[in-house]
Length: 71
Image 1 (cartoon, rainbow, N blue to C red):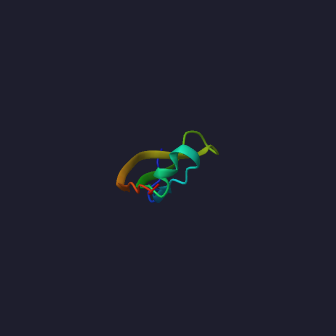
Image 2: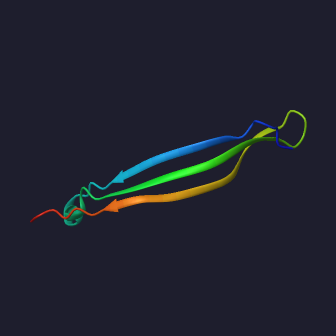
Image 3: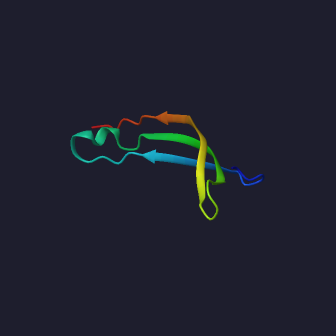
């Protein structure tokens, strides 16, 4: 049973920036951006048993950049 009006939309934006030592240092400063959207609902299977359920989850790759260091 899903309660009316109990749906929540969760929107997460994240950016991952690489900081690598040693031999992979030339990739330091490269980044990946993503946007994750999820619909979350409150359900009840039995009285007193409330659960948060992820109904769907969409991931949109915002972009990426590669910065090559000199040297």
